[in-house]
Image 1: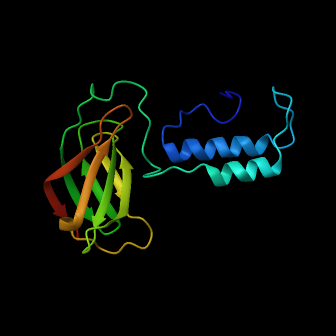
Image 2: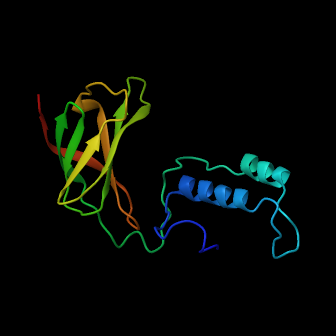
Length: 158
């Protein structure tokens, strides 16, 4: 909508798209618009309060048929003291790790992008050692249906 605003890298995550729009709107405060009106500070505050992403703000928009790309459902994992290393055959796939807590809820552990068949997933700050039995992994790729991964092999580096 405003190609002169922002960088050339496509933004696909819904939360990032919403934040990008809010930042653009902030740059328009006080400027005349094509309709002849102006964006006021109150208009901006109202829009920021009104619009939210419901659900997971890291979900990505599909820009083509997501069923064309099938992602493998298994991964080999090595647990290190500062994170996980995932061996996965799809270049550019994003591997996300969540820890399943005793009450069934999850918390984010790590995320990394596959390069050269491997993704390094550094733990989020404040995470201590985590047993691989409590880790849930998923793989995603632009315009592919995300898959929950099962761990084909796991090793722990001491």
